[in-house]
Length: 114
Length: 113
Image (tube, rainbow over all chains, first blue to last red; front, side):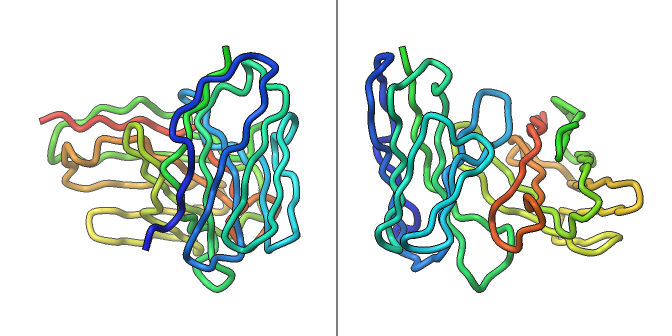
C-alpha cells in the first residue's frame, strides 16, 4: 500500500517554463488536495477536489491549474513558472468517511524556480 | 488577522520537561482543531485532534481547547529528543467537514538531552 505518491521529488525550473507535479493515491479516497509550504510557514491550500471531475480553488490558486479525471490522480500544473512559486508542494488525500481533518500526505515535491 | 496563528517559538526544552505549544484562531464557528507534527524535510502527520472544550489526552500528548478564548494548545509531557519537530495547528477552512484546512505557521520544538 503506497499511500500518496508524488513525482518528481525535486525539480529546478527556469522562469517561464511549465511543468506538472504528479500525485496519485491508492487508498480510494474521495478528497484530494494540493498545499504549498514556504520556508518557516504553514501550509497553504492551492486547489482541492471532492471527487473525480470536481475541483475548486483554495487560498492561493493563481498560477496553477488542476484536473481530476480519476479518483486516483490529481496532477498540479504550473504555467509560466515564477520565482514566487519556489516552494515545497504537498499532495494529500482524505476519505469521505473518516476523521475530518485527517490528511494523508505525500512526501512532497521541492520546486525551485530560477 | 490570520485565521489560525501560532505565535510562540522556536521553543527549546530539556529532555523530560513539558513542552507547551499554543495556537489561537479567529473563526468562532470553528468546531474542530488538529495538531500535525512535521519532522525536518518530511511531510506532516496528524498526532492529535480535539472537538470539545477541555482536555483530550493521548499518551504523552494532551490537547486543550478553550472556545471562549479561541485558544488551542498542545502539551507534550516527558519530552524526548525524538519530539523535536515543527508542530502545526490547523482548523477546517470555512466550516468544512473534510480536509480543507487552514494551518498556522508552525512552532519549531527542540528537545535537548
